[in-house]
Length: 254
Image (cartoon, rainbow, N blue to C red; front, side, top):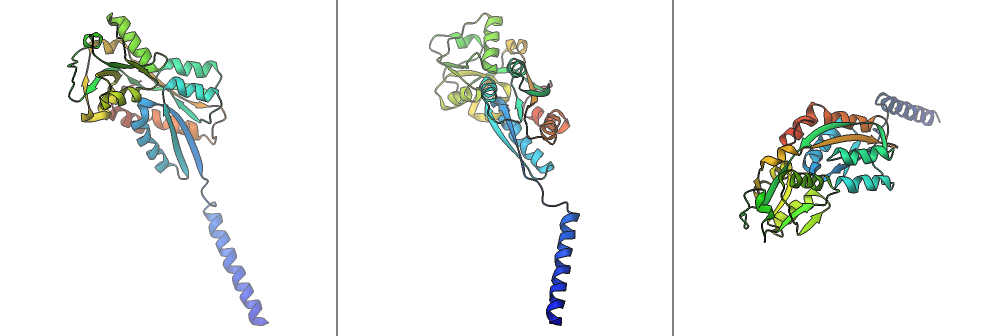
């Protein structure tokens, strides 16, 4: 019996010791998922930044929904779960503001301009904005409600050039995809998309692009994950680490 009592006592001591160790460590790390709805043109930079943010915030997983900004804000309006919204223009962020979707105010974090993209071998010999209006040149643009499409429309208006696209896409990545595949002779995309595509496309700058600059805002959505995590991500994007990655991807300062 004495041996049994001694054994029970020793087990209790071990258990108490384990409990103290857990208490010292403040228990297991809480697992949290932060859902970010971001413009398609941000995919490369934000994917990298998401990994960096996870590395600096134990237990946090960042998931992304990349699409055209107009589609993203429509999804949020319809109740899609989002913690943070990053738009490729202020127009779609204004839609979110008007719909009372934001917690706090939006903050500008980047700018972007358009560039002509052609397949690497440039089969239609496109060399300028004027060439996009030539007969027989298959051009793909973003739909006008999408930021890259709105920017393209402003470029057409400013230059007096009437581009007749063979298709209008819902995101800039869809335009780029058709150019890379050879379905289109050219497309108007962002300079960041041309840079990210590397030798898959041929990039052609044009002077009129400097007159149409897209500003990118970011904001927390009401009902977000909480604990200040959405704001922490926004501060990370607008801070030195986030700005360095965005600059490397070709984005301009806000």
